[in-house]
Picture 1 (cartoon, rainbow, N blue to C red):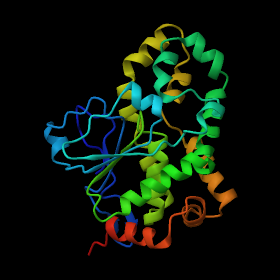
Picture 2 (picture 1 turned 90 degrees about the vertical axis):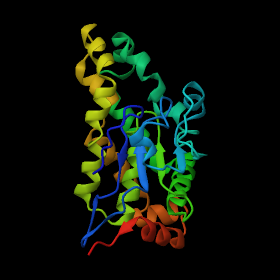
Picture 3 (picture 1 turned 90 degrees about the horizontal axis):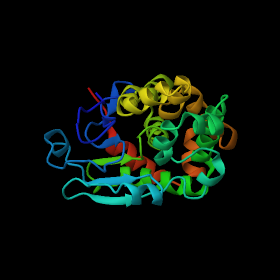
Picture 4 (picture 1 turned 120 degrees about the vertical axis):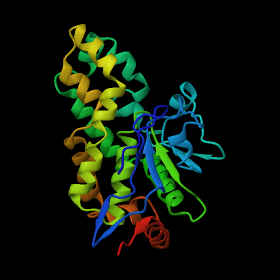
Length: 266
């Protein structure tokens, strides 16, 4: 499925239909992901048909203040700040500052050139696993997704690629998706993200900026995900243990989540 061609929401995707093995798939229309909703048009037909009832916002307080979400009609907001206690020490600028960096190649090179952008993202991805605020936020996300009264749930950050990408990785892994499915979904956001930032990338390179640095800033690459998966393996040994011990999600909640979001097929 999963890309949804909305004009008022960037990088909108439905995890429904993704394979889980044994003929099972993710049940469509219940687990949605996207970039921020500051330009959302609740009346846009493709958006209205989704019937979103819960929005889980993974952004920082500053990001939410700068670009407040516009919620779908009748939807409730759940705040789950992933980086509340880690952003200042990660070495990576907030997603909200991407526009500043992409407008100033010299500044971007000074702070993140020479491969440092990938190192900074790798550090940040490890905090998505081990940071206290991150563990609280992803526990909230999984609990909401497993709630029988949540309705269709849309979770998002700013660009819908890193914090949101890890949330989708954890969810799909917990539901039983294999490594190929998880990685394919993680990387599948790149075209939409690059399209959203295309004018800024063009301006960045026109000013002499390194095009690879720009792509590393606005997109995702396998080694970012590898850093988070390695953190899970080192600290917990498996995704199941990470969810149970690291996030503190009870087995009963996990069972409800699987029952709610899994389509057994035929």
